[in-house]
Image (cartoon, rainbow over the protein chains, first blue to last red):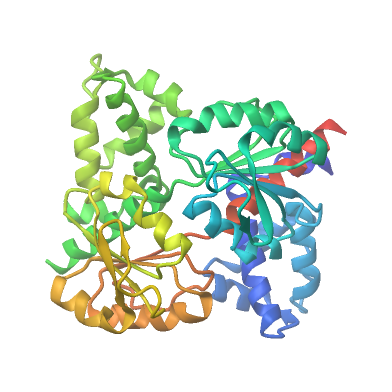
Length: 215
Length: 215
């Protein structure tokens, strides 16, 4: 099974969180069962793509019965590892760090925020979401003592690489990087980069294309 | 030319901001010229993919001379529409809105922040990055009077669709949506959705895969 999962294409992996979100919305609306056609219309992908994607993990639909929403969301959650009880810390308690600490969908995805760190003496000791901000000097020890899985980096670009090295030294499992810098870390420590300005650039392109159409 | 651009595949468009970022880093290091091989190593894509991507827009390399970094970044900026002087407003002056207002890479990408709005009386009138927070009641008029291009929505999920309708009524050109909700807007108003929890879910999957390898 592990070997099979390893060959799942990147694009399929990237689509799983989207399935998870849409199925979650269906559950909220108390929809228990959905045909692959309805799901495909809702998500704006073909029904055959959905079947193909899910087949990488064994397939979940019963011919003629559609998908059981609850089972499917649970299975996708398992595939994604959302039920592994991963713990996170946020490094950088500025506006972005605070926004993320308050982002309740993180907790809804099975992540437990266990620590917030900053190097600013005036912030250390303050409470954010019930968690006391700790000094950044404690990071490596905290990760080690608490087997922290994920570090969310919202530090300035200039500090990002150094901080990445420190959390890796502490034994972190993965990094969510909001800085502009591409991080150099060992290959067994996955990094997800959130480049917010990329979204604005893509949007600029789309707006320009619409303008060109109108002209 | 417009017709050609319209057929550029989505994946290529999504890669352009990444090219733009990497080339910007090269310029910072005062690197004026780069071979397609070196650029490919740096960006971890094949040299032929780079050539293929850029060929959608006419191609920019000279055989044997590589790319002139400054010309290439200028051209990609033009393709993306970063030199169109797009203006943005942020709706929702909470932690995330404040973080984005302070995100200087937005300005570096040619976007000008011209307004910040909130519905909380205790925040209206406060200054963020030198901009006075306005009442959300003024949004439609402000967009109309100032021909605002982009609305960045950092409002709660429950308010997102209603706010999307209002900015569209005001004449907005595009929306950057940080809420969980998928927005229903006319097809000529592009929306980019930033689903922060998707990144965490993808990271969870990667961490799980690494764990499976170790076992």
